[in-house]
Image (tube, rainbow, N blue to C red; front, side, top):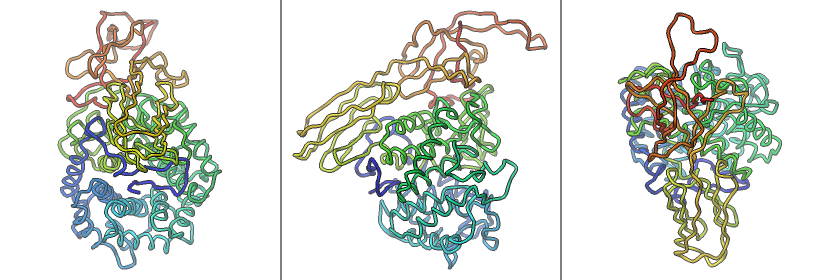
Length: 579
Ligand SMILES: [Zn+2]
């Protein structure tokens, strides 16, 4: 199966890359190859590839992982340059399987921050992608040697990596090879965490999920990408070991995190300090961190939980996150990227031409000193078909409505739609077996939820249709999300909207919107009735009620994922509601 995640059991089976083919449309037209080319060019320029060939070492301690994530993207995309990168990487591997360009001579002396096992995780995932798309080659040999070296070094003792990632990679390697030692190594890495296994640090052990054993934690906490990657590995482990209790633990952690620690966009991680989850309901829009990689990781986790349980709410969150975090990551041209994804930007960002030293800044940057997000987007877009549909013994489930052709077990269906811009969906059966098959389409929660199903003996050429209601809707937050109390947001279909004010447009801090009339559709944009709020500078910004209402105006809203494509701008998703 050509998919990043191939569990041996579960409620639903994944469909892979040849089974789901994207057609031009929202996802089929993403600039995947441009992003791959861009990452390759930049990694040559900043020396992260040269690190493997003995050039003076440049980049952060985890930069090897970016090369591996690029290789994973190339494997899924069928980019032949993976062969030359494989030769470069293979030449740097030591005789016993050790492979890292930062720590030769000082290996495993800093498990807290060294990222060696983390890097192996991405190496293994790249190798699995290559094997599943192409077959065994030199990269596969590198991966097996590295994984066997990890097992030989870490099977005994208490070591774990400060950045989870290798856990899910080892379980997937077990799935691909059947070699039990990889599953056992993953199990030990998971069970050692929180005993504790790592040193206490400035951010506290919760930063790397070492404050509590996984089985005792009630919610995701600490560094968001670390927490979500760990949860992916835990789900994979629970599925392969048949550990129902462990799976249910992650489901509960996910449920509380979604109910209390997740932004409207699906973004996760509200704290800049430690790039971490905040407390329950701590979801300020302007101080939202919402790393793009945390969005990718959340989609990876939701997909695993969907396969394990069959519960469509996981695909619901994946959809929200894909459209409003993952799709927001790259600029429309695929050559600059967000790292943080706040829901409000008060000061227009400044354009960065070279390597940005910062994760924030209000504009996408072509590259950053920590450039984990572009390669994560590259591998996600390149493997996206594997996230869109699933199967069981009765037929196929279309989890995400997007133009595509889906084929499985003798049934081939073409999905035609303008989604997410329109809700009309036509399914055309192109090929069908004689026996009855069920075709299921997940209906998103905002459209009523549940599924739409047809089961029959299909004839080639037969069509079925459905219509997903796409009227724009006002959204308000639970009052406990107190940072946005008194505000409204607008959603349309799976898209969250925002006001964006490039150039000399009115200050978004001085508007309020009227919800008396519904938003009006203007192509992909929306218009809402609003009013200026008059403000005066008198040296002290507090006192008795002092808002004066100004002139009525029309406020344009754009899909959040498109913001920041027209130059420096302020932006906000949550808009104060006039009363
Ligand atoms: Zn990132």
